[in-house]
Image (cartoon, rainbow, N blue to C red):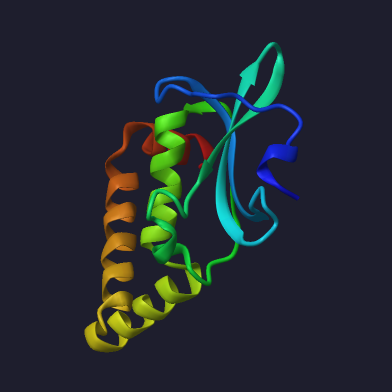
Length: 143
């Protein structure tokens, strides 16, 4: 599929416009000679979703996306176009979930404080529940 073969497209979007969703997929160029990564930002035009198509190769941002799976973000008009683009950029900065988890595991091996931090947070939660008037009232009611 080529970007030009998409059913409904739009020529521009505004960062403060509500966004339906975002996809980053690999598609053929118009001359069928290359595969490029395209960012499709979906907005509502005439009561139907329309895609704003951006070729990430021409913006020079494809090198950081090399060997990454396609990205899909569904916002369903809860976020703006700018916020959705920020979400996509954040996802790319993390590189991938597997790499992020590997880094967390390495930090845990170096740090050895995860259990200690969990116990501290649990103690803080218990102390909060003891002092919270709603919690105290519900405990006294159940006695």
